[in-house]
Image 1: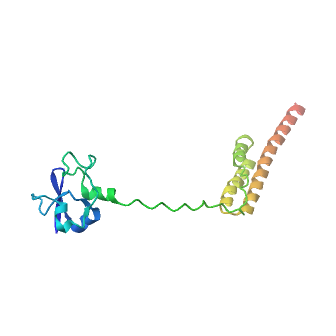
Image 2 (image 1 turned 30 degrees about the horizontal axis):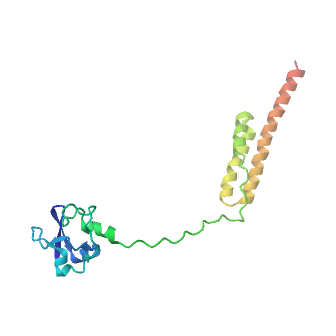
Image 3 (image 1 turned 30 degrees about the vertical axis):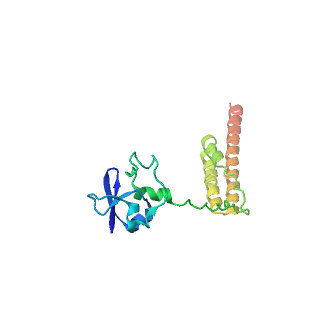
Length: 180
């Protein structure tokens, strides 16, 4: 059998007994077999004895001034009101620790390589930049030894670029002083 429920001045439904059993409706809810009328309190219908809830819902937040006119749909309202509280969540596992055997990341010399391209010249700076870019990708692949080698080569080419500026400045100054 299917029942209609009186809700905000109009009938809602039809709901099967199984649907009403899942939601547990108050005993003073008005129900009918037709949407036209013949409303009766759910507590007075013997087939609905298994779906009636014993909790008194006569509060202003759920009912309007008329205690038999529900202000919220009981089929949608009852599950939220009557579900038992959820059990507490289990504790979270501890955060994963990094591999204690991994080596610290080597210095990439990327910033220095870019500055050497700008201020010291292209040739040695570009070589330094190529090795500097390799450092982070090799470290991310856990190729620590190769990352350290790339870091040391980027450092070498950076200092060669820096040294070349001083050598060229010295030669330029020497030529300017002695050949004038």
